[in-house]
Length: 339
Ligand SMILES: [Zn+2]
Ligand SMILES: [Zn+2]
Image 1 (spheres, rainbow, N blue to C red):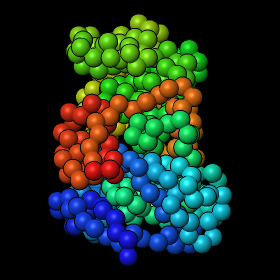
Image 2 (image 1 turned 180 degrees about the vertical axis):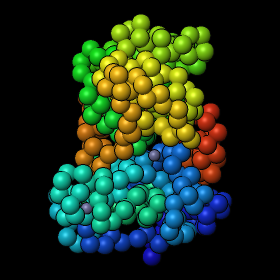
Image 3 (image 1 turned 90 degrees about the vertical axis):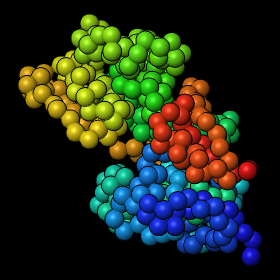
Image 4 (image 1 turned 120 degrees about the vertical axis):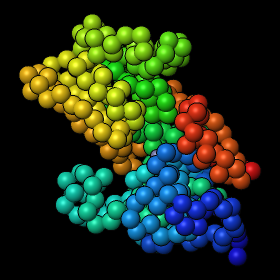
């Protein structure tokens, strides 16, 4: 039996273990993916720490996968062996429930499939994925650079393209971390008047390098007032987890503007008066489905959006995970399977 290496979590709150397993076979409707690269995401802590109910262990985390279809299970149509594919958080959907039939496959009611949580993910040389979870990868996208695009990338890309902002509108991205550094690039490439907001003057040059037209140092000035000086933001994309930072920007929205949350603060203080008087909104955005990943990858290939990554071999998965959790990584952490 041919073997593969995976980095698994043996039980909730357990340590990473590098183990050999039999290479699995794809079942009906599934494909086997030979993993080239897998991003390390903060949401992998759900698997590591057992934060969702019902996770079965041992479990292999990882939902930022770029690889190649290695084998097809029965009843798979539209995909062929040898195709490059991406697999993100969205781990597949049924296609026949009411949500799927309404085009809301992200809210599939039949199966809640999440890559690396409900089934094994990409911290390994091979993984099994439902065909409904697959995105096509353009030939000219490098695997390591594009792995985070199927989670951090799709989240910011999809939130921005559905935000209601149009070309030339002021769009602010709060935070320049793993999510924010992609959000700024996408916002600029989508033709928005792009504003980056972060703490400290030192981040300004990098924000501009990513495509931001304006940089607001929230330590030096009131970020909401600075946004109002620019005419007010049609959209503020909040990528940070500090609730106070989100609270501080909300009155920078122009009338009809929307504060879109993709980071997860513990709590927020939203002032309802400007919401009501200016028909402003606060909303969250789910990342997206496999076709949204595919659109993200295609847009990134077209416009040159790239994730900046620190790269580790699979054998150092535990170290890579700790580095990501430290919050110090610049900007995403990616595992490769060649060491
Ligand atoms: Zn993720
Ligand atoms: Zn469904």
